Each structure stands twice: as structure tokens, then as C-alpha cells.
Length: 471
Ligand SMILES: C[S@@+](CC[C@H](N)C(=O)[O-])C[C@H]1O[C@@H](n2cnc3c(N)ncnc32)[C@H](O)[C@@H]1O
Image 1 (cartoon, rainbow, N blue to C red):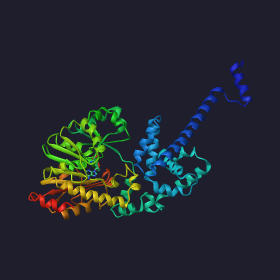
Image 2: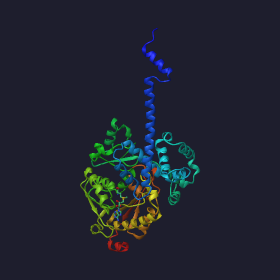
Image 3: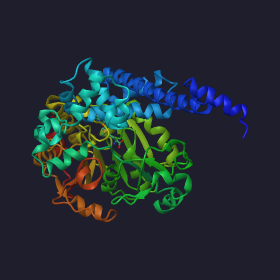
Image 4: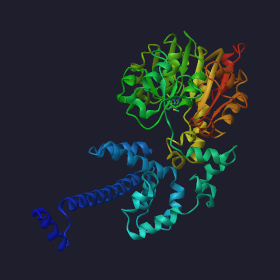
């Protein structure tokens, strides 16, 4: 059989130790891809290190620092953005444990934290390829440490004061563990425009398959989604049929139990999360005042209100002292919601930096503000009306203790059973006493607290009541 030119060429190359052209190209391609992956990881480590350098100064909330950094780096794609964000938030969640691990390494501490965050979010294997021998050795060493051999505060990455506070609660370690998980993405349907079944039906379509939409267990308006879909580009969102809202927040709005035609005050309305649901439950009738001392926060409620189709909401920027517009509503409101400024410890799944930004002194300041807001808001409640006090904190001093002190000072109010009030609309929530307490480990929501305080019908002595409480 005669040998072809191709055969001869292949033999010459083999003798010369050179691979065939096709193979050579394939191998180089694979090697290039590997090198590219290593480069990307090396760049990622630097990006995370850079963001952490700013976040760990604690001058701004982590999400604000991250948003600014992303604006300064507009060329990054969506995958780059989410890889950086995931690693930064992972480091904030596990900061105390990672700092403990970082002690044994060398080089800049922020780089070691970035490596740990990325090892957790991208996988250690992917990281290893981009590390030198010493860093690889260190990473293997710390990843082999069993967290259950570490003191509890280090294991769950809590500052000592918070470890002590949460440690005194029932099922403390389950709570600490749950607070270190990623929060799911909950949305709420707008009952003024649609129903949950209708939205769930649409989300069963192929285009939304990755979201694996499921009804939330307690709120009749809630849907839980997987991943981070680009919600604000969805038609459902643009048409005001859905809003982003944790199931726990939905339950707080339900606890207000508003009725058509009533006069209701959302005293700390912020960007209007609860206002929107309360207004929809009023079927856009009556009057719903959305108060807040922060004009920028209330301004953020405006586009949401526009989408919602509500026409009963009156946003008002109030002052922290004795505000005349608040004064005019004295004794007039059927319901007043105080969604008080608080430590936010119940939201650590979403805001892990709060455990490092808050401290006993800042909580002490919040306690004074909460008591003052409660006193001012209580004046607006009409006899027989209700004041709902809520926080996204798990700390008893911001919650039960705050309410019990208010009740001692204000005998015109009595505690109502929150579980019974919610039972009308929300199934399956069993509470052990009159308060509503939600926990991520028990309910899958952020941590929330709420109490319903009813002003007795007989309490017509508004003047006495005010004099007693103005100090
Ligand atoms: C927990 S946030 C409210 C969140 C909002 N209700 C929501 O559902 O999106 C607390 C709000 O209380 C406001 N606030 C702080 N001090 C206040 C005061 N003295 N009177 C009224 N609002 C106050 C803050 O500006 C902040 O927006």
C-alpha cells in the first residue's frame, strides 16, 4: 500500500517529537482555557480584596459600598458582579471565623479573607489553581479545621455581646446557624391587581422555570423564588402586580388588619414596603398616612406607590420632635403601625455587616428612639383603635421589654393576641404567647417581632394620657 503525503508528514512530525496539528491546537486551547480560568480567579481575589478593604472600615453599609464599587466598574458582567458580591457577603457572614483562620497565614490579611470567601462561594478546587504553594498549604490546613472545635462565637461568627444575647434564647445554635444562611427571594403579589394563583400560574411557564416559584407557607400573598432573577425587568413587576418583600414583612402588614374606609398611619413607612400591602388590603379606600423622618426614604416609596395603583396613600415627612401634622391626627387613627428603627439583628441573612456595625451602645440609642416613637405614635390612636409595634430585631430589649415598659406607662392600652388576629388571613402560625415572633430557623423568614396594643374604648382622657407620656 502506497503511503500518502499525509502519512509521511505525520511520521516526520512524530520523529521530530512534534504533535499532529489538530491535537496541538486542541491541547493549546485547553491549556489556554485553564490559564484563563486561573487568571479570572486571580483577578477575582483582587476584586474581593479591594471591596473588603472598604467594607471593613464600617463607614457605610456593605451593600452601599458594593453598589458604589460596581458603579465604578461598569464593564463587569453580571456573573463577575454576583461572584464578587457573593464572596464579600460570605466573608461578612463568617468574618470572625475567617479572621481566626487568617491568623495562621501570611501576606495581606484582606487577601486571606478574600481567598476564604471565594473558596466558600466558588469552591476550594477552583481557588487552589490560582494560589502559590504556601497559600495552597494554608488554605488546605484551615479548611480541614472542624468548626465544631471552635468556641461558639467564632464558629457562628458573632461578636461576644451578640453571642451572649442570642445564646440565651431557645434553640440558640439553630438560630445562629440560620442567620448565617443566604435569605431566599420572596415576592408579594398585589391583591389590588391580581391573585397569588394567577401569578404562580404565570411563573410555571418555561421562561421562569429556573425560579422554581412556590407559595410561601404563611402569607397568602407570598411567593418564594430560587436564585436572583432580574425581577425589575419582569412585566409583572412593571405593572405593579408583584413587589419584593420578605414573608415576615408581609405578616407584619397583615397584623395591622386594616379595613376598608379606615384611617391608618404607617408611622415609620420608609420606602413603603408595608404601606403598599396595608393600602391594598384597604382596597385603596379610606386614608393611609405614610410618615417618616427621612425624605430620601419616603421618596423611594413614590415609584412603588405609582406602580401599585393605590390612591389612598398620603406620604408625609415628619420631624422627630412634636410635629404639628402628627398632632392634628391625635386620637383619630383606627390603626397605627410603628415599624420601628431597630438593630436589624433579625435580618443578618441579608445584612450580615449589621452584626459588626451594631454594638451595645448603638442598641442603647435605638431603645430611646423606639420608646419616643411609641409614645408619639400612641397619641394618634383612637379609643378602641390599635397600635402595632414591630421590629426586625431578635433582642428582647428592643421587643418584649420595650412593649412591657410602654404598657406599664400607658394603662389605656392592653395587649391583644397577635396569633389570633393573624389567624383570619394567615394559616399555621402558632405562637406561645400574645406576641408575634418570627425566626429564620423556625419560619424561614427574617427575624421579626410584633405586638398589638389596643387602646381601650373607655380611654377618653386623651389629655391625661398625653401629659403622662410627654417627657
Ligand atoms: C424599619 S425602617 C421602616 C421600614 C418600612 N416600614 C418598610 O416596610 O419598608 C424604620 C424607619 O423609621 C424611620 N424613623 C426613624 N426615626 C423616626 C421617627 N422619629 N419618626 C418616624 N420615623 C422614624 C427611619 O427613617 C426608617 O425609614
